[in-house]
Every structure is written in structure tokens, then in C-alpha cells.
Length: 141
Image (cartoon, rainbow, N blue to C red; front, side):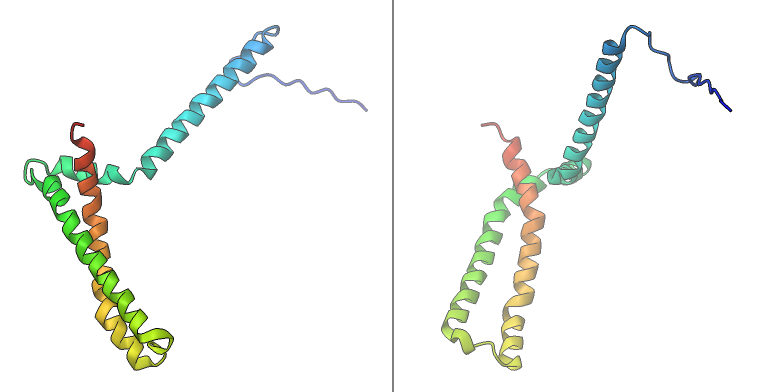
């Protein structure tokens, strides 16, 4: 027993001319490249951390016109406070030596002194820095 099956293209797909396989291949390559470019653009937009901040500034520009400029002025103050606290932390660790944080009381006292404040300053820096960077990028050079 032998069977023959005939396949016809679906009505949605255009049938390429029989002798034009190179043109069809090039068309497919071009379509694939267009899709790749679209995906890469979407990835770049998703990775742009400052896009969110630009949208925030644009949305509230009329109500807070000086926000980005003030953020630029405040950033060095926050950085100095953060660096100063890090310096104090490192100096205290150096003074206490390797046995300075071995017991629970000393460790808890150390964390109470530095942990929360460093975490909060770090968070503030992460909020203010992008706003300040946007201002620096928008200034004429």
C-alpha cells in the first residue's frame, strides 16, 4: 500500500515564487534582524535605570521645578556623611581587633550603632544620586 499526501500552503502565508529562493531567504533574514533590533531596544529601555527618574521629574516638573538641581547640591552632603560613617566603622573595627565582635553583646552594640544608620544613608544615596546624575547629564557642556 502506498499513500500520497498533498500539502497546500495555508491561505494566510504568501507563496514565494519558485525560482526566487535567494530573495526569500534574504527577506527572512531581514525580518529576523528587525525582530532582533526590536528586542534589543526593549531590553535597553528595561535596563535604563534613569528612565524611571526622568519620568518622575517630567511628571512633577511644574510642582517641583528645582528638585533635580537641589538633589545635585544635596548629593555631596549625603556622600560625605556616608563616607564619614564608614570611616568611623572601619576605625572602630581596627581598634577592637579580631576579638572585638566575638560576643553577642559587642556585636549587637556595634550593629545598633552603625547598621541602621548606614542602611538608611545608603538608601537615601540610592534615591538622590540618580536625580543628581540626570541634572548633570542635562547641563550643557
